[in-house]
Length: 319
Image 1: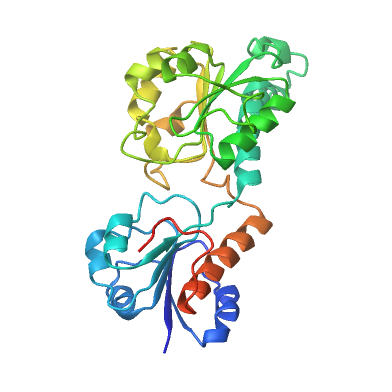
Image 2: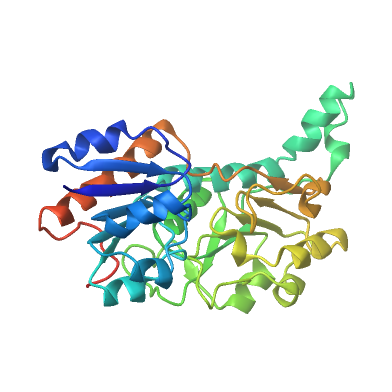
């Protein structure tokens, strides 16, 4: 019997996966908590794991007796110990093109909310001050301003393309990207210090790694313009949140828009929620009905390929 453990809280309906894996007569075990006793026991003998943000560390991987593939139902891989999986002969896969349009559009929406001072305008109208829009906060023309992008993967490039359509000049930092035919005429690659000092908007699209963790910190925030605005739709741990709050309160930067936090959901007294210059959305940049179905379908397709003796379409290791 083939068993697939689906461990995430986002999609408790497993009909799509069940239908896709019917060809191999797979038994689906769903859990919202991979650490629960019954779930861990099921994972121990499972042929495949499908996870979103559940941590799959070396200890858990060592307990897997039959697992052939760990499928990340999404893109971020920081919660999976890939070397441990490789050592055990387990494929690790992800959905490489997941929510590119949705996340890049969300980043631009957060930018426009600030650029056009929408929050203040709406509050003004609700307060009965119909003609006070220009007094809320000075708003420079967006065209010609500089957007700095940290991370030029698929989502970073899509964000750059949309920002260019708004007339922004794009600079970017990515140590793993060189100028090529796709981006050389559209993006200026710069070092981090240049990006921090020149950008009017900074948007984070880099994976979470040892080198990118808290890439936004007290020191880098001091290098930014006082009028700069920070956008994060990638990973919460890219930012030192305490340093960000201090920078906003002290006027070192103009504000921030965050779709991801280090703790999700945040507690009611979470300090970043208390400052109106910091806009927080609930890790929803990925969402559309199409993306919700795509990510499940593509992750399941790679599980099926591995369990039928084929190479996955989107592997991140070579066990």
